Length: 284
Ligand SMILES: Nc1ncnc2c1ncn2[C@@H]1O[C@H](COP(=O)(O)OP(=O)(O)OP(=O)(O)O)[C@@H](O)[C@H]1O
Image 1: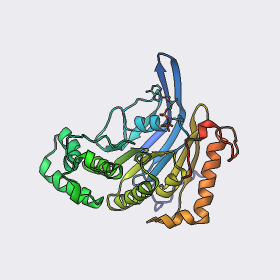
Image 2: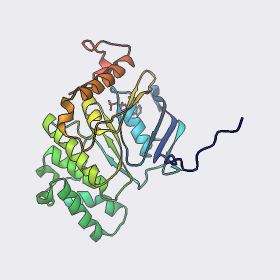
Image 3: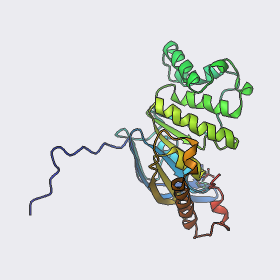
Image 4: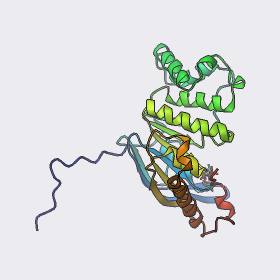
């Protein structure tokens, strides 16, 4: 029987931008070992938005920090743009839960901070910083210090700072979880708009099922003990997305499936009585 052949005009499968292959992480502490991630494998294509969802302690931040090169896996490998990640890399921009802005610097200078660290020429980047601040509606606030900005504004400055050196990939660790519900919704829409303009690959850690479903191309659910990937689900809602999709039966069904998966990974609790481990995952 002849060997199966690929048709000459078959579309080439694009190389993933990020490839996480059987990654494991055990922390060695004075109190003993903590197995944060038993095994995780995910490919993220260029331009894709992938959320990591799951209850507190299931290893989401650990996995993100390993992709960022800030933690080393104890097993498996992470490859970014064809090269194994062994240290923080310029192609990456990171945004944390707390905006972590420098309090004595203006919004504009905070956005320019990575440019100074990377010793890049300031002037062309000053123009880009102003463009980014305008994009997130902060043109009138570029000279304000962080203490003069609201939480949502500070987080928008942090997004501009992460984008200033034009990284290929944005890693976001619960960036909006400290914000009130309305501001958080606004930030979700603002982030979608930013990504329509500056096409980036995003890996996004969140506790919020709705936020993950709204923003993502794929939602990866982590869970179990020790923690693995229990679901990798495509979010096929049309883009650009607006709040209205959250009112649709399709969106509700997707959120229900994600919630049940998280609960099953923790022993099949009913939706009324959830074990403490699943309380970190919210549908608000
Ligand atoms: N630096 C560290 N040293 C030792 N243990 C750690 C360290 N960082 C995380 N852990 C442990 O690894 C496990 C996974 O933690 P991680 O923060 O990655 O989970 P998470 O899903 O992001 O949690 P959360 O949603 O609460 O932020 C937890 O048991 C945590 O206590």
